[in-house]
Image (tube, rainbow, N blue to C red; front, side):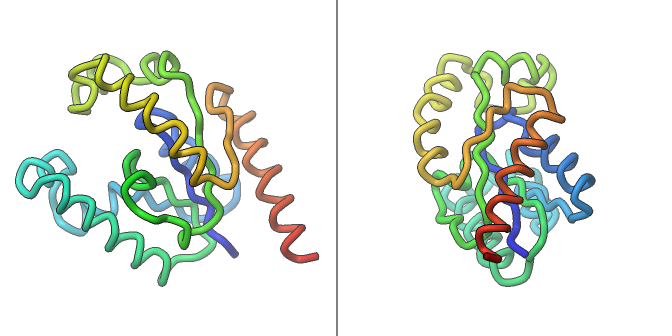
Length: 170
């Protein structure tokens, strides 16, 4: 079975929805940022600081190649930049979790925002958010309103997924 791939801006709910979806569907959840951090025994900010963004994007590309070859029937939550800088079309059925910027800010408390260097300049974060919206939508097979509550989001994803599975089996 195809993987379900969740994309979206940081704080859009990829990890939260991915976890709930994996539990509901009885699938494994793989978070690409966690996979990279575990593989290289460094946190993402440390990788950026020590090696730069280009190296991090190469690591993402390696993760995509490994996931595409070795993983099926899983939920994959990507880092926010992964679908912008890499081709993720081989990973599975792609769902863009689209949230309003204000909703993202409300989800991420001050402590959580302080862990994310991008949010040190909120105006810059919003500009990046606006820039990426269309790119996420282009890559995705489905756009999901992630401003809704978790049960509604899960229902919407499962409805699309079941329809896709049915049409492929017909």
